Every structure is written in C-alpha cells, then in structure tokens.
Length: 141
Image (tube, rainbow, N blue to C red):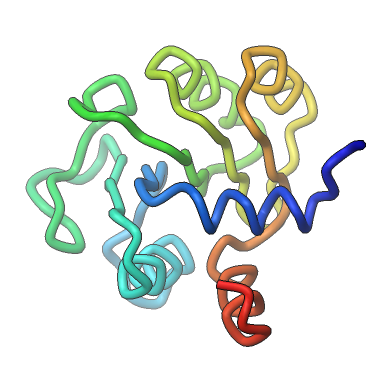
C-alpha cells in the first residue's frame, strides 16, 4: 500500500528529530528563520547549514555544507530555490540522511527522484512548521 503524503509527513515529524536546515536565515522576518525557531521550540535539534553564515545560529554551530556536519542528520529541510536543490540532495545522500523536505513552493522532480532512488523519503512543496502545527492541533503529535 502506498503511503500518502500526509502519512509520510506525520511519520517524518514523529520519528525524526535532527533537522539540518539548508538555507537557514538569521533574519527574524524570514520563514527560513521562523520555521526552524518553531521546530526547535518543539524539541527538534536544528542544524544550521548556510555557507554565508559563520559561528552560531539558534544556539547551534553553523555548517557551510551538509558534508561538514559531524553527526547523523535525519531530515534535510531545504530553503533554497528549486533549481538549487539537486546539489543539496546529492549531499544529503552522501551523508546518509533519511529524508528530504522541500519547503512550500519548492518542487524539483529530478532531485526528488534521485533522493527516492537512494532510499530517502521525500516531501515537496510543504511547510514543515505548518504541517507540525496542524498535526499538533489535531493531537497527532
């Protein structure tokens, strides 16, 4: 039986707790900041990944790329333009991530196919924070 997108998102949010956020922003008005802050408040470990930042963000060390993260990552949450997703997916595969989550408005079918072929779960065009909020409101998380 095929797993629906909703079931996949629920499973990922329930079972995976370490989230590398590629494209994390330190600007408080950007979704690439507000969503990771919310997820961190919900108990997820947020791993900031952004080559233009250094030091710390959200109390965690910032990494220039996924390959620089020295511990396992469950989900790679992508805040990048669709045309910039494939190299991120290739790095996620290389580091052994379990899942790719492309935020709202981000769809890259070729990258998704490559991730799925490598055994990763994939969600496209959905806000991780909004989905979590909805599931929490329904008492499912």
